[in-house]
Image (tube, rainbow, N blue to C red):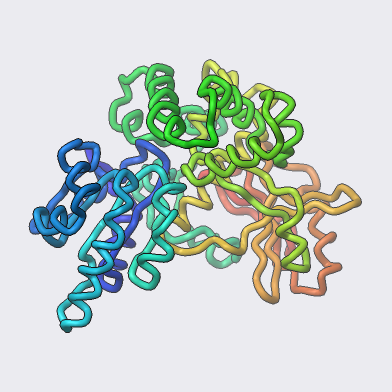
Length: 408
């Protein structure tokens, strides 16, 4: 059973303006399935997993494009990066001749760190780069695909299906991988074990900076146990037995693979935001729960990582809402100051700040206690939002509202 993906409309819209659409994302999140589902009848499909097709793409890119024609969907594109120049030449020739060239090529792959190596230079101004992740809650419920933004009026109009704490943690534990969603009978642990092995063998082994695969697996498990926490490269290096520069390089690989999302701290000066310690979040909570060896949703809900996983769930749902709409997410941060005042999330506009806290409780105590720390920046501090286990949006006072986690 195919479930509609919110990014479909973004791909089709971008295809009316850009000659090339590149869809990146974590392995097995449904990129190829989605693109094949929405492609027009005349668009051919070729996967570079096919050795014959890949050999032709590598040895004679121009003949490859001539053979398969346009419009064309190329899957696992990163396996033949030499195609970029041939694609650029074809796009430009049509443009110079006054022929329509929008939507000529759709490219997909799970190795963004390789796909992006030459794309920005070769296809500048010709390519729309989209990120795709596993299913969001709003996709599974068939809700609209508007990006989450904590303006009170927007939140009051946001539709959602009420859920209790057990249902939310069940979704966190199961994750959003399409194969698990479409086939509830599939063994979850077996699926994630095969997923991790495939990721390590097909993506990570290809990279020169990764030596021992077993060591990278230990790194992956350690990082999963630190989801929703600050990235401390020295601690990672010591735990895994690698150098701090190697740990930093491996974190970059996870980010470029779509496995994690990096959230930077807010500071009044842009340069300070870049040098301060960021936090990491797994984009699929099911994968993180598997790596951390949580046996079931109930144990996770009552375990010592319950808050970290809930925060990870909220952040990943927000990020997915922007990726699906094809919109940049440049305004999301977390906040921590020298007085140890913390705010889980912060949307920072040019003249306003929107604080967000994530709490497991139904009735959190003093959830807005740290919001006043933002007054020192001299910007308008908008009413804060506390994402928690309520089933309806409720004001605490004029400066703070409780909002259901299930509505993210």
